[in-house]
Image (tube, rainbow, N blue to C red):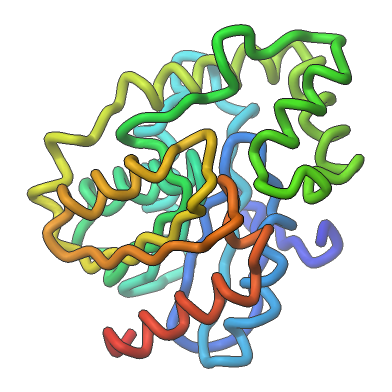
Length: 254
């Protein structure tokens, strides 16, 4: 994955395929590889996939917020000279996608959210995060998925490394607090962008009622469920996720 990343100006990103642009927004603890299934599938269907690395840990603490990341995405889309894009976000990435869509509706032709924050989330629980406690971090990582085996050693190691780094830990907590502060319940009814909601029936982080609230509050949204699935549907059930999303995009002529 790292080898395919491009560095241009202040942006580091992955780009694959040609066609309608889908800009993917990763989560707080989620790497770009979480979207491997999407990256492999959609370029074959006539879409260009772009995944910018969000500057989660490189901005000053005062600027570390959901709003700053939304602005960063606008700058990235402008930098790439794209007209209208489809935004796809998981967890914090979904929240950034929602806020970007609210702030720059002319830029977003469609929005796709899965396990998105923005209304309510359990985050990592009251005691999160404990530095230096590998087993605790492992349990928390496994709790994100319906099938704990999806939380490979590589994934657990990455989360452990993040929370063991004081600078990253402080930024992680700042972002999490910013996400909680930036509740979008009042904004959603004014947002008319077509939205596809794909949700795991067994999501412990953003439970199923969160998806139902998104569906109820957004004027033009379709909700699809995936059984035996936690917080990251595109990782646990990549084939079904791609099938549902592609079907929705075709139905909506995107």
